Picture 1: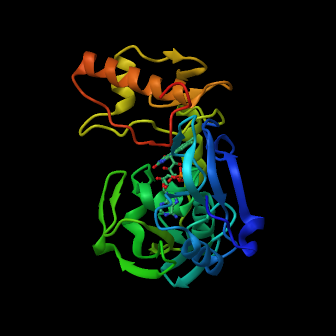
Picture 2: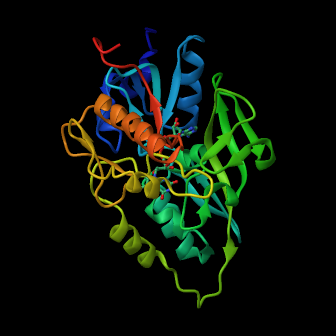
Length: 301
Ligand SMILES: Cc1cc2nc3c(=O)[nH]c(=O)nc-3n(C[C@H](O)[C@H](O)[C@H](O)COP(=O)(O)OP(=O)(O)OC[C@H]3O[C@@H](n4cnc5c(N)ncnc54)[C@H](O)[C@@H]3O)c2cc1C
């Protein structure tokens, strides 16, 4: 465990429960949890870390399953920081990684730029949306990216064009490991003043079809080619299947709900049960969209 310089101490937390920082409200402690004040602070902090110390980034934890034994190393949180959002040109916005997707949607609508409505219902940050190529209702994050700014372990900043990334459905392959998103330039169409935003309708559609307000991570599995994970799970008769206090949502079969007392181990074993049952019923192995990280709890290893 490194001894951190005095300047960082107010922003360093030891053994921070990740259940406080994930939308499933499960997960053991991060050994070190750091929220940078700004870029300079972040770069100096990264530079101060021993080279072998693992580093992991989180936004709003809305696509993360952290195991009950927690995370060894450092977790960098962009929540409440890196929050600049500017209009960079008539059709381009500059967005830092900690900005909530809903804010991008709201601001773009105000500026007459679109289509950005799909961001409205994604409860994460731009950083998470870049890492996941988050999308909804036909919209996708990377369709709008012109350029990203990244930071490496040594605190060095880079500008990278889209062409350096391999991007596909909910998947982004960066050109180098251990480089994280600081910001992006996103391009949209300039809309006519008569254009009416459909954000209310999209949010209503979500509310009608998804268990919004309950503890989940959104869709647990990616859709296999030509099909929907939710359809396969429902057709296998798995709605309502539970492990501990976690269950497959009755409203949307690709959501797993923590009803309040589930552990990460409950959620992870329910994910495995669903994969096995769907494979048995349909011959398809569903792949998790959610990122599963950290160590199992002591005793269950
Ligand atoms: C109710 C609900 C509905 C949802 N609906 C949708 C939907 O319609 N479409 C969709 O695509 N997703 C959806 N999600 C999933 C989730 O909101 C998205 O994947 C979102 O983009 C994750 O953002 P985050 O900030 O929460 O990332 P986190 O969950 O904190 O992290 C996700 C991944 O991104 C990485 N990451 C985070 N920030 C950075 C950074 N700055 N640099 C590099 N890597 C980073 C993390 O290391 C991790 O691997 C939903 C989730 C919930 C709970």
